[in-house]
Image (cartoon, rainbow, N blue to C red):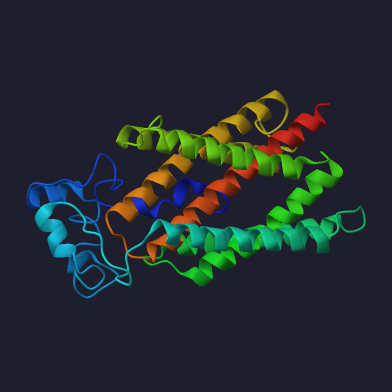
Length: 308
């Protein structure tokens, strides 16, 4: 999203020169190395007053900024200086996912999907999805992270996921929700291991390929949706039968690629001393990607059980 689609959620990839962290690493050797190798230096909002939305001067968030520019590598700032840490990202992501899981569980328990109530429950779920979409778009276009907005997005998205999961689990494929959760966790773990082992190299070419593939995927699904709305049925058939399973697998693979981009963004943010507030944006992006993967798994399981 910005709805449930992580394609448009990558605030870190909207800088002047593409994704700030690609092909960059802390370097030593003078100011030139510092400004070219540091994604939070020149061309980035964390190095100079004209581009820093978080402070009136370049050192307000990072008292070591001048030293970073001089030596080309970020110094380890002491606690309390406002730099993002991995613990910050973990805590904020856990908070966001926690809100999503709680509201999903409540929606599952409180919105019945029997024949007498399914239309009302599904209507509330779709309404929650639309609200979550709007909140996601608002946060995505804001220059600063808004924790309240991100948590509200997670709450409404959870309501939608709870209703959809209940419908599929109770009326189409028993146990599908838990299987989709396990599949999502497996993809997350596999991508994390592959990324940390260096099997996935996130660079400009990787980013360009993923974004082009994701844009094509989204446009194709939109065309299919339009045909379904005006022509009835499943439109062009991209979301049912064998084609539906194929495109569901493509969706999971794209979600895995976006996880790698998320990990790169978090790694660079921590390495180069991004403001602590950026941890909320990292949590927001990870939540979007995990929701994308979960929904694709849920769709695949529903199609497989419909074909039995």
